[in-house]
Image (cartoon, rainbow, N blue to C red):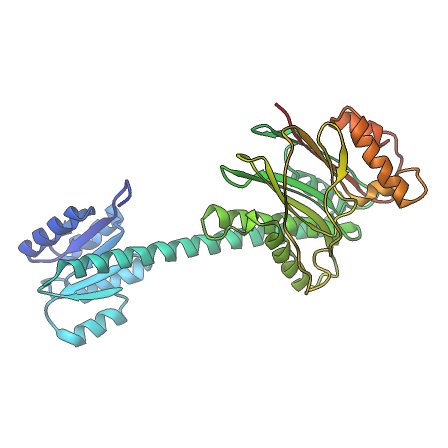
Length: 393
């Protein structure tokens, strides 16, 4: 049993039965409350909020079926086991119709049967409670999305503020890993987004994304993206699903969900998961370009390969790649808006310039911004987003 044993209320007018059942259940690790009549039992439910009720059917003053009817009406999630030796099959059927979770006949020849019924009912109640809490959580997320969409549609300047409020804290350190971000938005509402977060005690996740187009609809997709990732993290936290640790599975889910929205929007994304203990990176790319640049202190190289965007094709599939990160490294992720700010003539020259810059600049967010000329650009034709992930001593 757990540190806080389940609390069981026994309602029975026979004192000997109360004592025998209470003694057995306490020996099995439960905490037991007793009531020798239905009215007292209902009061104890209100005062003590037990986890499960065991109730006899034939009692003076208030019949067990009446007690059961009131419990299922007022406390619909509270499991009730009927334990009775009178009435036979008809009473069992009536009790189950009124909401009893199980029916055990007296005399109980094998107490293990009773314990099994109790534990099964408690487990079922736990699962129902967790499912309800999960639904409530998803409903709350959906309501937040609806409210955010209304605000996005009402005021684009407000939308820009909302979007920036969703960004993670800058210069964030998780153990020895440091994350910095920089967003330069165009004259339209941004479709770029970044996020980074601890998944659990052993992993952290991060991504950079670029939604097609601009304006409210593109910004709304970034809100959806953060919501979906938040849902996957919550499922992992509840030990219901470990998909957030698998980059390819995460991108596959995002692709199906965004494609099914029929918003005529797609996005590119690079999603990575770092395992703290081994300093290993698992990642997957959904059409992200330019590729992230990994610098090990001596040489800079592109990380990733061509892949399909998210939300454009329902048949798209993604691969998880894995690399052992250097003991000290810098990982630079850029949205494709950077390519339009560079003076080089063709794409090959632009990529070479990016590698050379990362390799030769004393890396840090401020120096990288300066080296890329992002501190002096005028009005931008597209958003430019930079995410810097570093591991230091």
